[in-house]
Amino acid sequence: MKKIFLTFAIALMGFTATYAQQGKKQQLTPEQRAEKSTAKLEKELSLTADQKQKVYAIELNKFKQNQDWHQKAKAERDQKKDLAMKGMKENREQLNKVLTAEQQTKLETIHKEKKRSHHGMKGKKRGLRADSTATKA
Image (cartoon, rainbow, N blue to C red; front, side, top):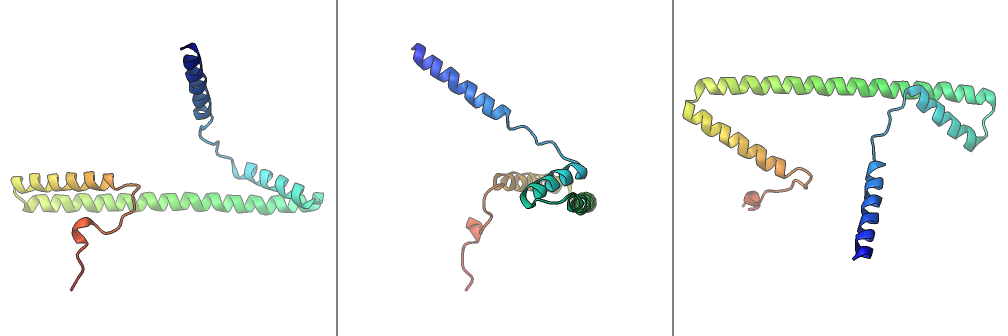
């Protein structure tokens, strides 16, 4: 009994230690990335001091451009998302002006069901649905 308990305790500690090491990676600045990349290239290619300075400048420029590109892309995604949400809100407001209270309730139920079923499909391959497998004649 003691051996089983001890084995279980050791295994639990091992899993805990492994899980604790899977923290978020620290984001490096473009300067830090360029320095790391240059050091690797210096080691692999035996760069001279002059070459090292030039390679560092090139790498720094590359990483700064990448950072700018990522920031622009994120801003564009956020802007598109905001625009889409605004459009959806306006659409719902227009629908609610036309529909009766009972129809609005039914539509809300349909939206919730669609959202729930869509949530269940996350991570799965989205192919043909079961009800649309019939071939066209």
